Image 1 (tube, rainbow, N blue to C red):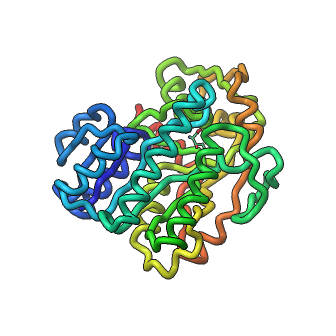
Image 2 (image 1 turned 90 degrees about the vertical axis):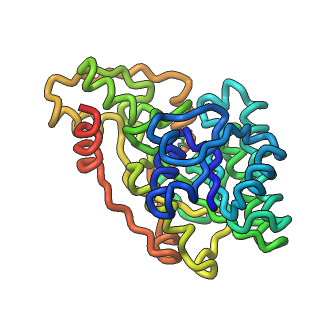
Length: 309
Ligand code: VAH
């Protein structure tokens, strides 16, 4: 059985539905701090779990005989800067709970999401390599960098089969993101269709690594299905889909919504974005477990507008 913690989040919602499609609805238990959308709640088992509560996680794993956990609960970069202590506690305690369950043999496989937020202003920003300088400047980035170290430690010391991906900014239409710096790339579609205008909280030339959710979900399933010996990086894998600026996505949207007007009003999230890479080298993921991206900006804009119109 599979347990998804944080199943109501931007990734969790679609990941849960994909896992239920692959393994059967009753094989995938969805859980979150609150209930999720109708499709998620109706399609299979659901439990309220606080990701910081070890007993709730352990009891659920024992009751349902869970053997794989996808820990998708976290506080993201922008919100994390407003509540640093909560972000650290949520992001770290939840990881230790799940790694300890695996160490104690109560579950036997873990997926844990990292992020390009582990990189900082001293990291080479173009085609950021798999192994490089990492001095993150957000609590979220620090928690993801530390989490990567602990994943590698639990793998090498206790043989825990934990696998991880450094997601770029994710673009999806099913579930709004919560509190991220890359959320502009989702909000822009809703505003383009509702108001034909959007005031972007990042400057027009802020290039960031991004990915369409279909690619991100496929990558997650792929890394978890790969034979263990192929997963050589047990911290986390760089992953890249595309890289664009707010100006790029605005002009791509204008091809479909000619009256769309974009304006720029950078806020505190600008310095977070400035500390991150503009593009990522994911050749290690391509070599180790045959990753390949399929969505570029053009295809992403068409799909997003189609689903949201
Ligand atoms: C955030 N969407 O903005 C997340 C992600 C790379 C960005 O980690 O915080």
